Length: 85
Image 1: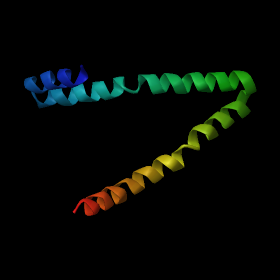
Image 2: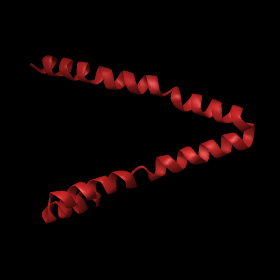
Image 3: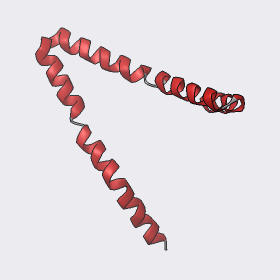
Image 4: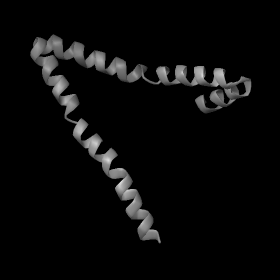
């Protein structure tokens, strides 16, 4: 598993750990990048630049929900901690 590989890299030194972590982070973005490339290609094939614009707008439409969840997360976490007290 990747976690065990990072742990093994930690044994060799800090620099190896940093480099391995960066490489692992880059490796984890392969699937989303391929998905974006495929969606851009398909949207261009179906409706040219208008299709690319609609696809980009559709991908951006989820941004507001993601930012709201990120902003509201600490608030609900604090409320849960207060409720437990």
